[in-house]
Image (cartoon, rainbow, N blue to C red; front, side):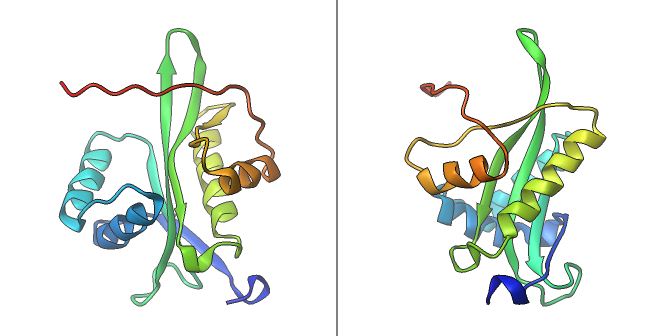
Length: 154
């Protein structure tokens, strides 16, 4: 596929996208099974935690439309700063990188954020993802800080 020949369509993710979402999540370095991904997507939907979008080439509702990427945008309401929307994840299939899939997904997330009343989008990206950093900078984002992330099982 060349960038010029591909029309990218974006739509809200459906339950039957779970296997594709899981596969792509693994490419990002976060392996998960299809059943667990379906549960996660159902929970996001039930609790209305933002929106999950998928991208495909051509008609997004076509039965054979291959999911080329996904993004999850979430509202962030915190006491210490003004409300904003945050990209919780964005992944483009390795075979579809450079075709405009990421830009189409990011545009959908930004439109969702505007429609939800947010004036600021935030993206966090692992320090090792230099290609992703260049992508976000090309899309008009600027780096504002570097931070550590800490986990504790509870």
